[in-house]
Length: 319
Length: 306
Image (cartoon, rainbow over all chains, first blue to last red; front, side, top):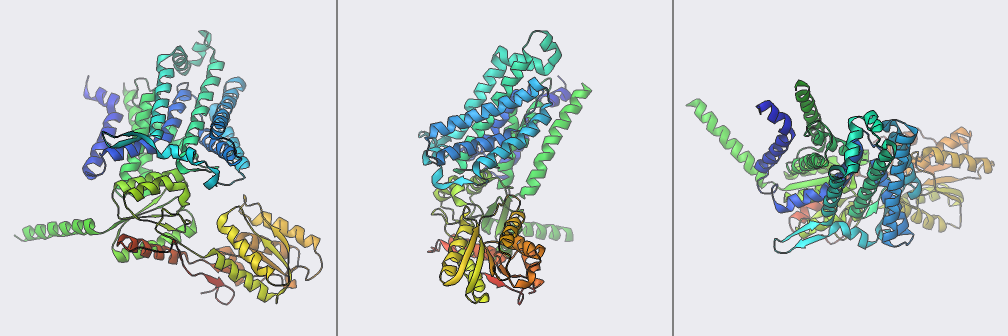
């Protein structure tokens, strides 16, 4: 294996490790500490869940732009039900149902009606956002309306007394979803069929794969993931806001793209998506600690995403 | 030899610079709202005071993302800063405030709302602002006539303004609050307020049937002014007042029409007062009051040009 091949295969990973080394040198006492790493895991947990489940549709070369508004809507639905005095589990189940239904609707538009995913989910992005405003009356729902049992989920975790650390429940939940998505995509026939659709839709159809049903269900899973992330967000901020999830969509897609630069054929793999999420999260955390201006931080992150994707597409073309 | 001395002095300078950096206190300001003009002025006032104090300042804009405020508070705590300032509803970032409290790092709110986890919150006195503008109205109409109120009770900082105005108008036996309107604010508040005011003007065609419009913030006041102009009733002497004294309101006041007064928060002053408060907290002083008020200024045609 020559150097070019190594860089092609591990370029993004090498980039990630360089980022870690850079921050470790510049922030010797505060970056590579158990507490900070746990912090990062908690900070990226919501983005991670959206990105993991976004990977499911991106495996089929599809997109879901509506995940951010779905995350807002699910949080709002739960919070409105809480404020009406319903128990927590009803709020959560309703929010998750909204996620599944919204996802199915996306899937219906894309696979049954045949609208391009970009256009269909752009439409539902606006619709879900409108519903979130409608249901909440445009207001942030907070304070006594949000039960403390719900918001304390995001503030507590698994205490490991022997090591004197606490693994946040948000991080554990994200890890759990990673395992589930990994299992679905990599270990089941269902997952392999999704990859087949991504490879060649026509051929998959001719091979007898039920393309329509599979796409429909994949979008439902992405919607469900977005709803879970919305609930996590609401729990973390102990409130629900009709625009709370709007930042998630672009970052989730960026994370999947970053991950795609690592795979052999350029297809999304959920473990690589995790690496993409980690790159974004570590950059945010480290640059903040280094007092880098938040706007410069944003430019840098965008630049790094472009750099990684450009690099991988150039090396792949050469191949 | 010469270059050697130069090199040595340069190294020494670098050394001292890095030492002074290490000695200076680290303060982090975190806000989701830096794009808003008011917040920019807070930060401007804060920066000026911080540079006087020689602080190593980090200003972070999370661009509307409240959860990211929590993440950045965690980062600042981890970085062991000496003080943190937030400009967001503290109850929504309580998860971060608890982390800061556990690390004994003081957090001060810059117009954020009061919270037990904050050392203090520096803001304008919303009660006093509403009192000044409603008393202005009552005095201008000599304690009698019909008053239209524009309120927004769903938003606590605006709701308290309405309560005070209710009390003051209620104290004048000849003042009648003819309508208490909550405009739809999705379009910014001007257009719907204008529509509501137009309907009210149509329903009360007689000259003098509306004496004044009291608005809990500037946008409805501007909408009401536009409605009065469109109805051709600018000569009736309907007195309009707003709160916040935004640029559009100042413009209207300057023109000397119906829009007579608004009240300006001292955003820059809130910024510098916040810097003083966090400075006191960092030096270990106990700040007793959970709220620190920065005085506001009534803006009329007399001082709008200042």
